[in-house]
Image (cartoon, rainbow, N blue to C red; front, side):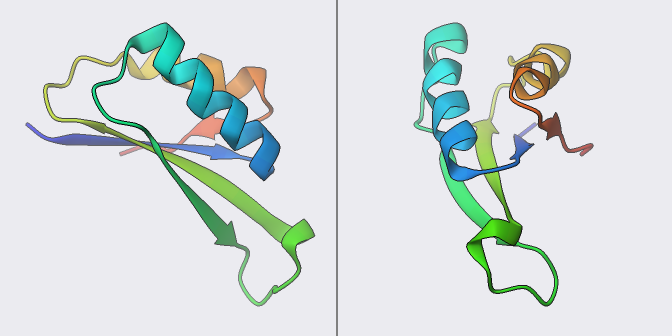
Length: 80
């Protein structure tokens, strides 16, 4: 089972902070990927969300804990 968790954050600073905390809290095997997700029809960076993508090939990361971490930074965990 190869899972991918996607945390949605309001801005780049929050995404970078969450990525750093993920490594500390969960001891990730791989560095999470940061992806800018522009809202439909918008080119302005102010209208972009940032995604933190966490590969979880062994299914060992708790989705509730990931969602709680994202929530601390005004974000959420996307449903699979």
